Image (cartoon, rainbow, N blue to C red; front, side, top):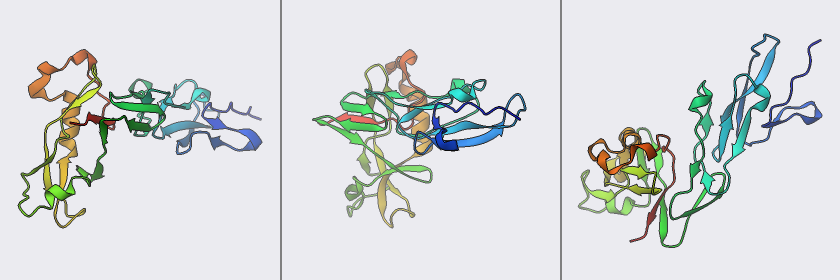
Length: 215
């Protein structure tokens, strides 16, 4: 008979059952490297957690909740290489982060939160601008597009515009192409890179909380 496998750190194996400790995490069964049978491996950790996975140590698979002053808004999905696993983000300037996926704007600051539709990020809060009788697809409705200054934990932004998204509204909504936004976040606005310290620029900022000072 084969020996029982050691329960992974991110699971509870009491009462002869396998139960994930981090609610929303995803596991898959795969063949053990020694061909001794199937074993459970962590494949995804929910928002608010970072993944710990070593291919040679399946019992160490874990979803660690982001600690105080750190956060993560998007799930972590296994990409086949532990070196690609992202960390939790440091809390942005103007916000408080008690841990997990919670980011709360402090007094005199506000947090931008976009929704997603197809290839676009869009806002509901600026819809009144785009519903004005003189609004066109060139009307600026808000400014979130730009790049993240990692060294100051702050965003710098350019305008976004009223856009026709038929699946969201029969009129115009405040939106931006997601692909452009993500490219600009990763490259730091190539036409303005002199304003950024490349050694401090994050390349895992899709899904970061964007907090601004009230003007």
